[in-house]
Image (cartoon, rainbow, N blue to C red; front, side, top):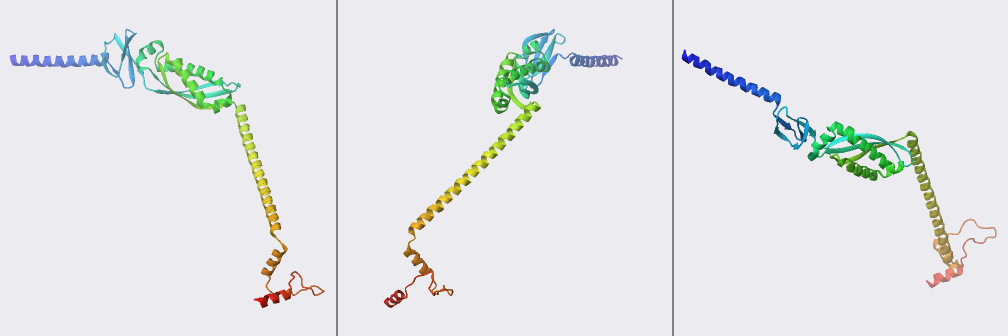
Length: 280
């Protein structure tokens, strides 16, 4: 009987320990006396709702349940697209689409959360109005045509002003991209008409230059022919013409002769030919 009693006591103790362990594990899971900060995040430590100076890095951190809580903020680079209307220097309405790459300063997440809030409040309350104001100020300095032709300059100005404006909030601007511009239908038609007119003017200029070049070429050819004829006239003498005629003569007289029986075309003295043959 004593052995049976001892076994029951032992089993009861084991069961008590197991139940206690399960209860403690349940409390640990439910109350969570630790906080996990994932990669790319920082933890804002709060004690009874008050933000503390300590910023929790990535990893597992013990905390006091109920007394302490942790708010996690993403410190990775994020991309958001914004659209805003602005007036150019020549009072044209331009709708600009910007892509902003930004991230929260990891060392200042507690101050940012305390002053602004989480990522959504940062975007809606800080970045969006800042982008709109900076864009309007930069666009107002340029005409609508300059917004297109000086796109890089406009991008740099927006980038620098936006960085300076948001730096005080602990928001770091990594890059700004001007994705697209859109203009009013009237201005778009005016741009299209101007481009067509410029293309037509260039085509007309090309045709005029081509005609001028062709005319100059004709003049040069005419001058060359005239000079060749002049030189030919200087070199053609009666003796030379006679010599060329003799060289081309095949030894036969024409069968058609004039009415008085005179030989046409070539004036040849037979006696000179005969004497020439005898000398040979």
